[in-house]
Each structure stands twice: as structure tokens, then as C-alpha cells.
Amino acid sequence: MHIGIIGNGFSGLMVARHLIDLGDTSLSISIFEKQHQPGRGIAYSPQSEKVLLNVVAAKMSAFPDNPTHFVEWLSKQTQFLKDDLNLLANSFVSRAMYGNYLQDLWIETKQIAQTKKIDLELLNLEITDLFCTEKTVHIHTKNNEFLVDKVILATGNQLPGNPKELTGDSMLSNRYFQNPWNYSLNPVDPKKPIFILGNGLTMVDTVMQLREQKCMNQIISLSPHGFHILPHRNFTYTLPDWISELPPSPTLLQLVSAINRQFKALHKHGISAEPLIDSIRPHTQRFWRGFSQYEKKRFMRHFRHLWGLARHRLPFVTYDIIQKERINGSLSIKSGKVISAKPVENGIQITYFDKTSKQNQTILAEVLINCTGPESDITKTNSSLLQNCLKQGYIQQDDLKLGISTNINTFETINAAGKENEKIFAIGNLLRGELWESTAVNELRSQAKNLASAILIN
Ligand SMILES: Cc1cc2nc3c(=O)[nH]c(=O)nc-3n(C[C@H](O)[C@H](O)[C@H](O)COP(=O)(O)OP(=O)(O)OC[C@H]3O[C@@H](n4cnc5c(N)ncnc54)[C@H](O)[C@@H]3O)c2cc1C
Image (cartoon, rainbow, N blue to C red; front, top):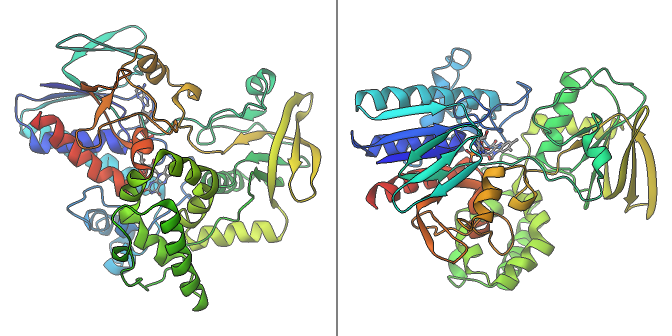
């Protein structure tokens, strides 16, 4: 069987690894990757060595059945040779270091494939389209075609969507960066602020990178809620089981009431929501799947941002840096909405509604950086592959447009007629509509293993 994998980030790499571990000489694999070095993807190809993983090393093993794999790998790296394993397990190491781990896994994967006489090739190409016949999937690049028996969409994180308030002028301008993970600043006027859209982990990375590039301009970050991102507090406290008291498929209301009760109990003892979130995470996919469409929509409207705030936390050192920036005023976090952004001769003129003053504000910024996070609505992404698959009816978006409809047991995508595609599979971010949490290593490592078994069994 010849399998094509589109994307060689964490998901593409780890599916290939499990396919090779489970497969034999009848298997051959072609991986297509348009941009990044093997395994790294956007997350682990940071512009700065200083940006850290947002969870501790102990939680970042690439293998679901070998939880200490990453920490053991770390302990063999020159800079950590003398460090205590327990300290390493609780450390927040750099994302670049995690990228090195994945690159080592790629080298090891190639060696295993060679030993097992399985063909494995990595092609540095962007896939733009697919075409399925009864027996074959035709994979298209701009100038070439490849034939495989089955294909896996492991396309991962897309660039942030352009807010509709931005006109053609601003999007074409060199004062606007849609890609917050890969941009370069020309020399900047130190008197004008840098304007960041979004207030999550990508905003934090961007602040860290700007400062590393010696850009000391004032930074303004604007988001609908203007929440202050929270730190990991390193609690050792584990909440007693409260989940088993819930019905197997709690309604959104039952869940929110139970969470509130637990939160108040923790709060009374001066403890943050972190142990509570840890207790919920193994069950989020089950809860999500039990919600009605109406409940999912309510969650998205009322609780998504709060969940994101409680769940996505910063390592303490990073939190400290951001706090200092806020206190000395060099980073100003605002809540509101952009109204317009217009490039002018010496900058970009941004008008936004400021929720605190309840007034429109206009400022002249040096550049505008979009840190609103990966776009999930395929119709708004830059991916011609996903858009073409959608147009041809090979895939359909889920109702909330968080990804695509997929059978979560077989990983087969669902076509426009509502039928499973036996030849097109999906993993990762594309499954967010089905699973809600389908983004982090914590979820992707099991998906990669299960997907490899599902494909080889069929
Ligand atoms: C900035 C950032 C930081 C993160 N930090 C963490 C963290 O600390 N811990 C954690 O658990 N998770 C983190 N995540 C979540 C992260 O999404 C996952 O950990 C993981 O990297 C996702 O892997 P992936 O392979 O699914 O997607 P990606 O890493 O996005 O990889 C997809 C790959 O597919 C390629 N591709 C896409 N389309 C095509 C095409 N048409 N043709 C060819 N190639 C294509 C892309 O170039 C890319 O390399 C972070 C995410 C981001 C964006």
C-alpha cells in the first residue's frame, strides 16, 4: 500500500513513524511538506530560541505509551547531562529544543524504515489539489502529480485569518503581517507603537521576539476581552475525583454548574483553577461529543474564551517578563475591536473601539501584526488544497467551521454527500469540530498511533 501524507509537522511525522513501526515491506510512504524542516511545523520552528513550550517536559512525549520518552531524550542533551530527571520533567524547555527532538525522531524513523525495507520519501512540495478515482488518489502540486492508494491530511495550523475590517490596501501593505510566526521588521521608528491583534500565546511569543530583535517600541495588544494571560503555578495538588459524579454525557449547564462549584471550593483555599482544568482535560473530547449542536454553539459564544484563558498558560519566567512589560507600560493590553486599518505614508493608521473608554481611538502604528491564532474556517485560509477538496465535495466543514467532518474512530473524512472517504484521512486541527481539543501534543500523539493502526487494518 502506498500512503501519501500531506504535512510533516508533529502529526505527519508521528503517523509516518507508527505506520513504519506497524507496517512491513508492502508499505511505502511519501510525505509532502511545503515549508518546514521535518517534524517542526509552525510550533517548533520559532524565530526566537527564547520562546518556551507552554507545558512541562513531562507532558510532551511524542509517544502515548512511553510518557518519559521526551524527558529521557532531554537528559542526553549536552546542556542537561548533569540535571536531575525530576527537574527536567518539570521544566519548560524551548520550542526550538522540542523541534530538535522531533528532528531526531525523523532521523530515527528513516533508519527504522531502511532496516524494515519500507520505502519512505520526503518531498519538499506544496500540495494544491487532490483527485480521487476508484482505486487511486492523485495528489497534485503546481507542476506535478503523484499517485497513492490513500492520503492523510496532516496540514495542521493555518495562518491567522485576516479580519474583515482590513481592506485590500492594508493587507497588501508591508506594514501588515498576517504571519506572526515568520516576519522580518525593517528598521522601525522607535516613537510609534507596534499594534498586535490578539492577546493569547502568539501575542506573548511576538512580544518576546520583538524584544529579542531589540525592538523596544511600545506594544499595544487588542482583543475582544483583553484578558490577562495566566501563568502555570506548579501546584502539586490533585483534585479528588468529581467527574464520576456527573452523568456520562453531561449537558453544558450541568458541566458549567459543576465546574463553578469546584472552582469556588478551590478559590476558598486560595488555589487557582489549574488543578480543575487538569481534571477536566482527559474528558473534554467526550463532553464535547455529548453536547447538542445548540450547546456547542453556546459554548463557543459564552465560554470559549474563558476556557482558553484557564487552559493556555505561560511558564512563570515568561509570565514575569510580560507582567513587567505591562507594569512599566511598554505593553498595553486593551479590550475592543478594530474598526479600520489604513496604510499611510509613515505607518499604519488604526482605528479601534476601546471597550474601557467606550470610545473610538485612532493611532498611528509602525506595523500591525496579526496574532489572532490559526484560522480554522477553511474558506478563510490560504490553503488551496483544503479549499479545492471542499469545492470538489471530498470533504465538508463541520457545522461550527472548526475543521472538517471526520469519523473519529477510522479517521476517514466525510464527503459532501455525508459518506466516509475510504481513501482520505485527517488528523490534528482539522478534527476540532469533532473533538474540540485536537491541537496539542497531548491529543495528537494518540491520534497518530490510532490513525496508523486504522489505516493498516482497513
Ligand atoms: C505557535 C504555536 C505554539 C505551540 N506550542 C505548543 C506547545 O508548547 N505544546 C503543545 O502541546 N502544543 C503546542 N502547539 C500546538 C501544535 O499545534 C501541536 O503541538 C503540533 O505542532 C501540531 O502539529 P501538526 O503536524 O498537526 O501541525 P503543524 O505543526 O502546523 O504542521 C503541519 C505541516 O503541514 C505543512 N503543510 C500544510 N499544508 C500543506 C500542503 N498543502 N502541502 C504541503 N505541506 C503542507 C505545513 O508546512 C506544516 O509544516 C503550538 C501551536 C502553535 C501554533
